[in-house]
Every structure is written in C-alpha cells, then in structure tokens.
Amino acid sequence: MVLTKGFTVISAIDQKIISMYAKGMTTKQISETIEDIYGFEASEGFISDVTDKILPRIEEWQCRPLASVYPIIFIDAIHFSVRHDSIVSKLATYVVLGINEDGYKEVLALEVGENENSKYWLGVLNGLKNRGVQDILILCSDGLTGLKEAIAAAFPKTEHQRCIVHMVRNTLKYVANKDMKNFARDLRTIYTAPDEKTAVRRLEEVDKKWTSQYPAAMKRWHDHWDVITPIFKFSIDVRTAFYTTNTIESLNSSYRRLNRQRSVFPSSQALLKALYLSTFEAAKKWTMPLRNWGKVRGELVIMYSDRLLA
Image (cartoon, rainbow, N blue to C red; front, side, top):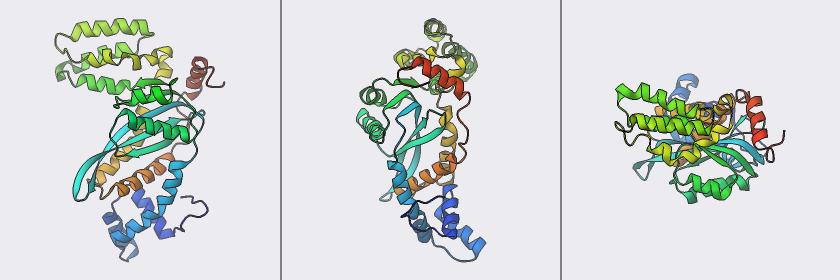
C-alpha cells in the first residue's frame, strides 16, 4: 500500500491486518488469526483502530481529480446489511466505474446508503463534474430510479444505455421455466439485430409470439426502447463493450465476497472501509485495457468525432 506524505505511519503488522481486512475477513477473524500466527492478543477494537488508519487515504481517493472525458461509464448497485443503533437495515452501494480513453477501468466513486431518485443521482453526477469530468459518451446502467432524468440535466449529450443482460433477466422473471430457453433465444434476436429498424420488427415478432401467454413480459422493452437503441449504431463486436454491465461484474464479485464473509456490518463506516480496501485490491489486477479496445475506441471516435479525438 503506497502512502503519500502526511499519512499515519503503518507498521508491518498493521499492513498485514489491513490486507486481511481488504480480503473480507472480519475483525474477529483477524484477531484470531493474529493470535494463531504471532502469538499475541489483538482485540477487535485494536483491529478496528488499525483499519481506521486508511480513512485519510479513502478521503483523498474520494476527492481525487478525474479525466475530462470518459468514453464509457457503468453504474451498478450492491446491497449490504448494516447495523445502526441496534437495528439492521439494507444499504445500497452504488459503484461508478469508468473506462478511460486508453481503455482501462477506474472506479470513479462509491456511494453508500442513499435512496434512488433524480435529485440523488444529479448530486452523484455533479460530483463527477466537480472533480473534472466534462463529458461522458455512453453511460450503461440497470433501471436505477431517477438516473435517466439526472443524466439529461448533468450531461445532456450522454447516451444512456440500459444493460441488456438485466433487461433479459427481468423479462424472464415473467416466464415459466419450460419456456425460458426459447424465450431467451427470441430476445437475443432483438439485441443482436444489425440495425434499429430490424430490431423493432423483431421486437414486434417476439411480442406477438409470446404476449398471449406472458402479457407483462415485453412491456419494459417498449417502455425503455429509447435507452436500448444506442447499441444499434455499433458493430456487434463493439456493442458487447457496453450493452451489459459485465465489465463491472468482476468488481461486484469482490464486493459480494464481503457479503458472504460478513452477514452484517457493525456500522456504515466499517462497510465503507471494507468496500474501499476491496476496490484497491481489485484494481491491482486491472493491468490491461478492455478487450478489443482499439476497435471500440475507433468506432467511438467516428460516432462522436467532435467529442473524442482520434
């Protein structure tokens, strides 16, 4: 862990404790491990005090300057159980993951515990602007309440792309198991269509085929067609870079490990520390750009020639 000037000095044993915390271990598990390995008692309070030493780094990370342009940004949500005043409640963590101009992943922000609405999302997006972001070409998300309106206000040129994988999953919730495979195959004909005109025709065909059995299944495709269609500007190879939130899934899997190892976080600050440390660990592996980034960027330059330089 690299610390900048002015940070609290972290000893070797502190480093071990922070590393274990980053991997999802609880303060109790760390305390027991320290005693087993090193033969001395480290209370849970001591472990918590040690991990608090990274709070200044988290604060600096939260406020760091960002690039002026991000070709692609993903926003997704993970839920955690957190105890507050002896009451356990579910808190959402919203992950904002950017793909920079060189095709590398960056976690731009982590937001914990707020309710979804346009005012909230406008605050998140304005936070990115205040840190230097001037333009986002494509923003991919699931159906987060109020996000569409906030994008229109903060970044009016940004195209909002709904995650197709989530669209398919949400559609299949209305479908019986015996029909899921065939229904999913028919849905695929829509989002792999060569152009929007063909996609509209296939949407109508799928709707007509299944509506008598599952009248509610295709409604969201019609309701959200405007945020499904941006993908049809691009080749099928390039679409896969942003029509799903799969790019963020490996990061989410790191966060889900925290859920498996801690059924309840003792406080929102404990959750925050675990999330950021997990983020720093995951980012160590991001040594390569997005797959086919040269081709993806090439098409983005053509589509947005006035906003992304060749």
